[in-house]
Length: 409
Image (cartoon, rainbow, N blue to C red; front, top):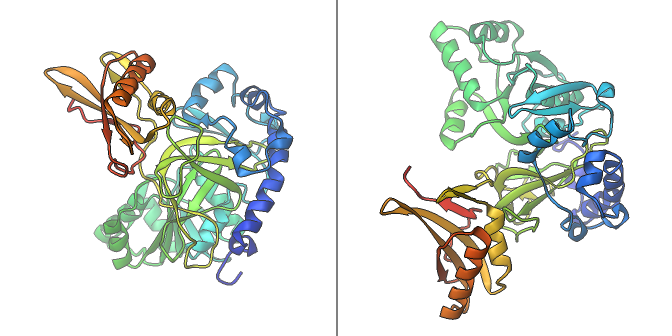
């Protein structure tokens, strides 16, 4: 395997793009054989979905909508191609969102992230993601098995029992949240027990601040992180270069402006949207609800796929103002009707025991007439009056926020 998991990681980016989009129309066609996708993608000709520009014209399926869609059409909203009884596992995430796991080696693309974190065939890895109904443990276990590692199914809780297992089985690796890894080491120290066999970890599911990474390093554990969701597995993973998260090879990632289907420019913060090639449970432009941004260039580690900055917050910024819900899509609609505007955000405040809203928009040529026109559009779209503030280009924060709620409630 050398320094990389396989040759896919080091492909010329143009070759990767060509090879992935050559397969995409077939993936879309297969997805549309399922009733949920047929309805969601109604009017789409799969044969035409052969480029990034064509993909960007398809509607985004928001993960937050899956709960209602699955209630309407149980168990999986009609988005599964393979019948439930022919799946490997039927799982449940918080929400609840129900998830089918199909057959095949490393369908979640986890082995690649495990390899980048330093795991190798023959390693023993202690897996502390939950094995109770939720997909996390199986996402990581499937990748570890594909890589050739033995897995200790630790799960969560039972900390002292897990410490005893670590002391006896001597795993060299850990998979789980970074917080629980620290709990294991802290508890082992109090009990005067040895868990020092663990030298490396692949963590996910919680933030990994630099302070915690440094603390774990001091006690002898080198930790890297990955970003994963139940529907598609590992979206992006860290390499030893520690410069962003590298997009995985089994899917396509876009960053779109929250509330729209439109990709943003490189470096702009937006919602992470993923398209997977899973034959049993394909995902076509799934809006994760998470914010991130594409980074320029490629990783110094030699992996050539795009990189994202990691998790940067949530894209669903719906706010209730004066008793009315205002959504990011409405903010985007106001901007769309006025081509002179650049980056925009709706700032929600509180003054004199009343909600206030200010529509701030970057504009190269502001004028009172344009300000008035935007204010009229804002009221038309949201049914609420607000102040419009036209500001210089580049003056609004690049944080992906369409709505910034600054009320102290």
